[in-house]
Image 1 (cartoon, rainbow, N blue to C red):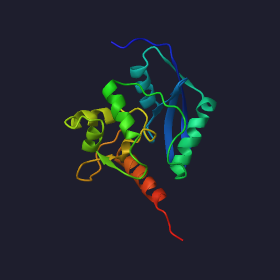
Image 2: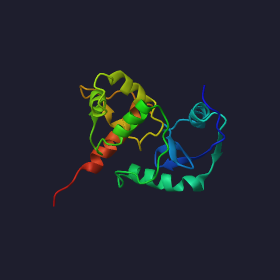
Image 3: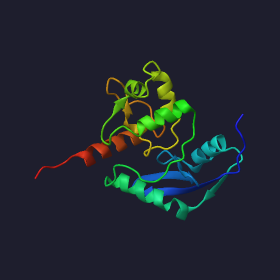
Image 4: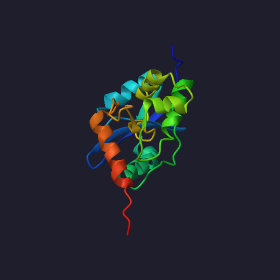
Length: 178
């Protein structure tokens, strides 16, 4: 049973070109980046499951620093983030999510690569489950994880969103020689 909290989770709807994504933060940092074009209910369901007794409050100004960096990323001018993140999970989930943050921009790892990185090489399925529970899409770059044979695999935001993010990183990583 989860402990009740009275924590406030601030949220806003980030809009940039074709992107519409709900984002949320606690006083400690960004805690949620939603799936592209999903309704507010996705955020509300996540919030009630992760922060029982917590309050969701729209606060566009509070989320502005996060929105600016995320939009810069979506424009292809930012490759990493400087804001704090508040991700909460089991120790295993946290190890997986931290490993995801170590995947270089524009590159991909397989699930077994992530399992080996956290020194749990036989935990590939558990790694997949932890990746699927990642609440902070884009900034904790689970879109950079693909199947061992190079195929795109599941993604909470949908395979279309995953392909868009991988394509964005691939094209912004290209260096044109003079």
